[in-house]
Image: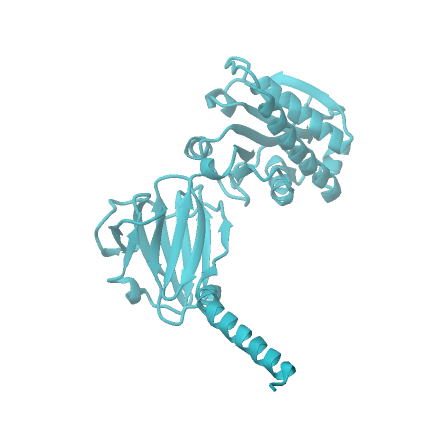
Length: 358
């Protein structure tokens, strides 16, 4: 008579062997397929102009070596970037540079010559042109994109698969946040503190705030760089934004005692439902509550404002009066800047709630 314990042990061993054999393909697939981290970047780079793109390779002194693009059928919106043997997931970094209309891929441990005859293939209809440049001990692949896109990338064997979707496929609400000034444009300045610095700091804090998962924020800048009015307006158009919010400050040179939070809107362009006035009012209320400050009001925008050129609900938020010495000092405090950012995040949630009621 067989020992029941030994029989059970054999069946248990057989079970685990079969389970391991069945799981092996999945484990190998997971080992090969690794997600690549993709960062949002808004920095403007000089010398990143455009050229005639498509099926051509060669050398351009300004743009680098032209890469080969080949359209081929894919089951999803994606294309493949060849990688040299031995490239690891940690060797690859991707940046969405949507203010420049580009996707940058940094790859360590590979030489520029590797891409001289390599082909980026798949659904490359959104890639107008692509270039390769030396970078430290590797290369940068600069892909010029025809529209603002969101990406998901996986690394499998010797290729990087870049899948893409439009923001509208992933999010219900798209908002462009526009920190005033930047670079050579300081804006309102009193003492050593300027409007551009305040707007940038609050925007950086806002980027870290939690907003509804169905909302995407695009920032015109997250660094102290020059951004033209045309570039700001182009982002609204290319991202097909639903709302626009400019962040800045205000002044009253004739009355340095003036203080508080206020917003401006384009009164000459009427939008039915939740429009310019409603957006300006909501933002003012929520930020004032969060900052425990005074609401200075909601006003028609001055002539020549960027709001005059925008046809979606848009507002300009003034975080305070830099001309008021006490409020100026308050606006420089990080704890207060954090409350301002939290107020804007609260306003974004409120905006989505109001929009859903329509």
